[in-house]
Amino acid sequence: MLHLSLKELNRQFRNGTLSSVTLLESTLRRLDLIKDLNVFISECRDEALEAAKISDKYRTESTPRPLEGLTVAVKDNFCVKGTRTTCASLMLDNFVSPYNATVVEKSINAGGIIIGKTNLDEFAMGSGTTDSFYGPTRNIWRSGIKYRLQDVNGNDVGETGGLDGTWAVAGGSSGGSAVAVAAGAAVVGLGSDTGGSVRIPAAWCGITSIKPSYGLVSRHGLIPLVNSLDVPGLMARTVQDLDTFFRVLCGRDIMDSTTVEFNCSDEEINLNKVKFGVPREYYCEGMTDEVLQSLSEVCDILEYSGSRIVSTSLPHTSLAVPCYSVLNPCEVASNMARYDGLEFGLRGEDESSTDALYASSRSSGFNEVVRGRILAGNYFLLKKHYDEYFLQGLKIRRLILNDFLNCWDEVDFLVTPVCLSDAPSYSDYIKEDNRTQTAKQDHCTQPVNLAGLPAVTVPVKLSSRSLPLSVQIIGPYGSDLKLLKLAKILEEKVNFPKIILEEE
Ligand code: GLN
Image 1: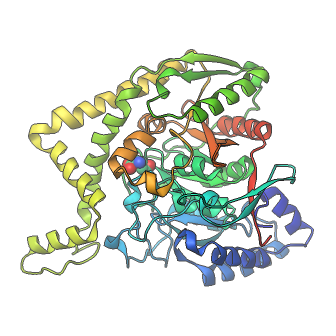
Image 2: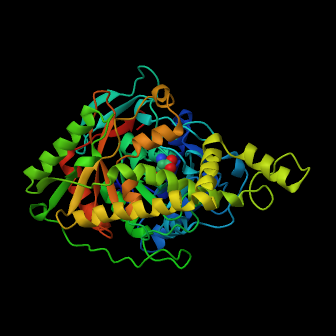
Image 3: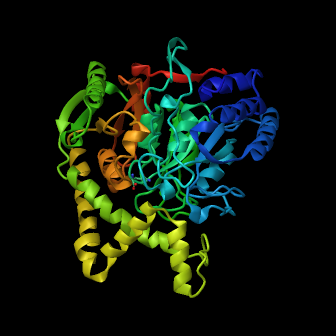
């Protein structure tokens, strides 16, 4: 039952063949089955069981809520009251959150059951979930665990999962949530997306995701990476589930002054009237033929369904990664200042002076990636460098936004690859450092964050290595619901298979 969509689960809940407790019990067995994938940093088994009992009571006594009894995996950079919230860093290894992030609170109020806190790259810096203090997360699609594949109509379409060579990375930084959802250990997953961290793992794990328009979903209780770029991102196995989850989470929040009222158009979409652009600049060196082929097949499907597809240009795209690489460390340097070993975070051993305490806390609490970004950010923010780096970065950010604004005069949406290839094997991925991988893998994802726009990803086919290949659809600000509708249409047409683990 763990691979079922929310709609089917709800049907079974309604006719009494399934209860929240039974669903949760199978989920907990699933957590045991995928233990070696290193998906969770902490599990919330007891709390989840209590919540499932309450949920069953709720279902019998009143109208079920939108996520009634459904399991939610939460990236470990969102605060969940009473749980450790580590950001996958030794710095916060024993930080227990005293409150719920708004998205967590909304999930719980809608009947969702939090099953655990998932792995990520330390402080969400990375694209692979390879740089966590708790070790890397393995991609269920190539992890050594055997599984069957089932198409949308429930037909078996193969058996696979064997390992030739090493296991594949999950994608990051929200890799734990993506694998939890792909493996059926959660119906929906919460991640955060600053430069691609929800879309990349979703793409590599064969599930759907949405990076909402900036401000539509509250960041309150999401431990910040880059406040001006961060958004909570959502993942699910089907677009319908994603849509339900999105509607639960979005809306203005007095705890996050950057949120806006939710008034996205919910109009139906007629593909005959839609014009898609394929941005020339999203092709980049290192992108595999298979990725390009899958994009072109998606364009064919859309064209065959009556849409128009045109080649378009976003001329400043190549500046997005350099711009992000300046703005990200600048905000990181300022955000990370709070972890001083006195007020927040691990307390270092050297107490000979306050400075020595700061230094020992920060050098032992953070990994090399985080320390590197703090150093870079402080360098860019020095008075003598400020104009040349930070201000320049802000100006380029504006050019990137303008590219998108100009292109909406010509096309309604953009369809692009998500990353350069299918999920790389771990041994290949770590041949290059975090910075190099981020600069490469985020080519098609970072511009969207810099412009604050919404984007969805949809898995479309399997590569020659039997790993998922996905596409991204980007829309104008506030077109989130339309994107979900487009994603749903595409999902129906591509019939991408789902993983069924043996136990089911
Ligand atoms: N890979 C990017 C980075 O390391 C994006 C991370 C994210 O979206 N959280 O900064």
